[in-house]
Length: 113
Length: 112
Image 1 (tube, rainbow over the protein chains, first blue to last red):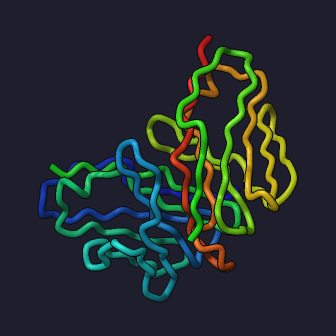
Image 2: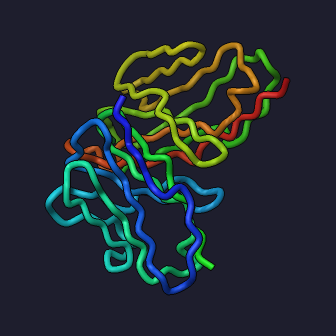
């Protein structure tokens, strides 16, 4: 199956700083990538749909100015958490596929201190 | 929007037991996913199915499109099967690229 590589796998940052998470498709071209987050003991939730060459589509309640998504090429989508706060601490994971077979990145555990 | 309900939330069983996890969804879909999440968070896709039944090793997934219900079965369960199993369906079911909505997961523990 397809391989999605996500980096970093974990990151600790100070409040107010920005953190960039990268998601690369290694063996296929992804016009669409999905970003999810999972708070402790909760289910995964769709944050946004990343579209190559166009603006991302954000789910209701997700601040587009805080969670910047860039999908400048068919193999790379990035999520930048800007001005991070402790409440942004969560597990972030990307995937390709939804109506088709889903391939997930390894996930990034973000801790904001 | 699709809603996904999964049960049970927690399941502890003895090695060798037959395991069943159930999933129901609210809106007709093109495909349903069964996923496995390990303690570190990593997610592995087990099955994607749109009709009938699929089998992979000791894992079997079935789906009834009319009843909007799917089940994941594990035969001859083993401690290494211990993980969180998650059912997921397209969130909007409108076709095209569609992100997923997830059940709350079933935390399975298989005791030796």
